[in-house]
Length: 200
Image (cartoon, rainbow, N blue to C red):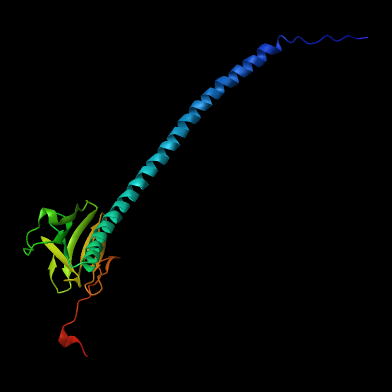
């Protein structure tokens, strides 16, 4: 009868522990490499997000400025329609600013501090190119004034704004129906016809 002796286990334990320690050492190296790759990938995503967010904020700030400008005109028209007061929106093309005031004095050339309701400047990404009135007047410098009374706007016209990419947008002030609207592009202004041009 043969007897078998159990193999010595002492030799196996050091080999297994060596393998485990080598695996731990190798996994630490892979973890550091993986960590560097992950940090680089995250950095790239953050950079792309910042670029896209900056473009989005620029576009949104242009839209917000234009919306504030249109709201100023609508506020003047609505306030004048609901009362016997007169209001004026002054667009300063030289200073690239605008203001809304309630007219309280007969001297229309002077703007009193207590008359000003809204005063704001255009940012670099929103610039007034020119203003054209429906009576044919045109200006690309100085001040353009739109007056609103109980019966509507004294003159209609359009204000052409340029965004940061020099794309034009037109704010059209219609004196017949008090509507102020924003349209993309440099739109053609409808001018009232003279009495001799109307066939009936």
